[in-house]
Amino acid sequence: MNLVLLGPPGAGKGTQAERISKEFQIPHISTGDMFREAIKNRTALGAQAEKYMAAGELVPDEIVIGIVAERLTQPDTAGGFLLDGFPRTVPQAQALDKFLEENGRSLTAVVNIEVDPEILVARLSGRRVCATCGAVYHVATKPSKEPGICDLCRGELIHRTDDQEATIKNRLAVYHAQTAPLVQYYRESGLLLPVNGERAIDEVYQEIVRELRNRDR
Ligand code: ADP
Ligand code: ADP
Ligand code: ZN
Image (cartoon, rainbow, N blue to C red; front, side):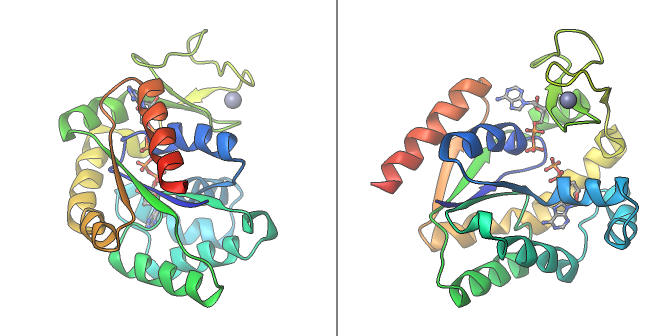
């Protein structure tokens, strides 16, 4: 299965991607995680991406398209993949279509996780992530067993700098201007699977799996 997870910042893409990737045994490819890793390792890519991310702006299309195309040529994606946070603009979606077509592949479905903007602010401001393994928590809806410590690896839980109120506002505005048009783009191509993301994590997950199994038949 070649999947895209679409949805505004805080919709639950990363949380669901983790599970879907295990269930269907396909690699979870998060462009946000790739950029954060590059920043941590002080690579040239990290230096290019950092200022955009800190401001809640999108990293330029050429840069993002390049790293995704490279990732999708790796052999572990041959049996399927799950893109999380890419594409985020119409030119990125067009580049993805073209790249897949040239390689004799195509998307199976685009899961769109729908969540009201007011809920998104609470999700993003309460999000905590493990600095070591990237596991995602929430202070109210998905707390770790011990405050500030990752259940999985005992790493330190941090509050992403772009999850502060001012940057969150900009990221949501950027989503509406640049990413929301993709909903119509994928609806027109018949790939869109809308999912109500305002329910508990498990319920959202069950619906996604059900929809995907229906689609795959
Ligand atoms: P995204 O990758 O779309 O930005 P995340 O998966 O990081 O979203 O989730 C954003 C925050 O909301 C995290 O703190 C996560 O624990 C929490 N969260 C995710 N899904 C749900 C849900 N269905 N209900 C409540 N909280 C959720
Ligand atoms: P969220 O969990 O809020 O959806 P991500 O972790 O996916 O956020 O992305 C964090 C930041 O990384 C974005 O605000 C943006 O600056 C950059 N980024 C990630 N993916 C893309 C993309 N496909 N195009 C442009 N910028 C991106
Ligand atoms: Zn951890």
